[in-house]
Length: 164
Image 1 (cartoon, rainbow, N blue to C red):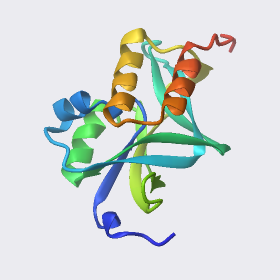
Image 2 (cartoon, rainbow, N blue to C red):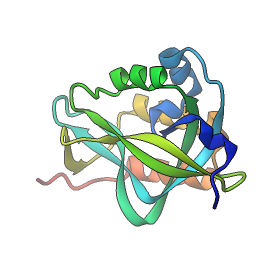
Image 3 (cartoon, rainbow, N blue to C red):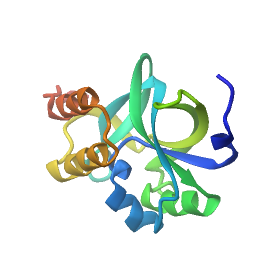
């Protein structure tokens, strides 16, 4: 599909706790525009961060899967602020350019997504209830499909085998 006029802006794709409007407002000060979008070819995962053993959301390549989330209209300044919260300088997450599709119109947007770096182990596990609650708040804030919400809940509550 052809790029739309939406693509003349910077976009940030949030799939975890940054879907929460309250959290994003605290981190960025404003949300000029947002859209429900999908990232095809990836799956949602909850992985352990090596330095703290906390479990955070990540997206991993998987040609057969799709991750729903929110594209926020951004600026270079906003992305630099998000880099701080996402621990880019510490090697927690790294930026990647991806293409997402707006759910309502199927228009494609070029967006930045934060992917877990080597600071994450390969171990998938269960996030804390507090972290999961922020993700669920974001899904509710943006009225994301209840079937997807249930799949996130099932993934977050799944019992993982913890072997390295």
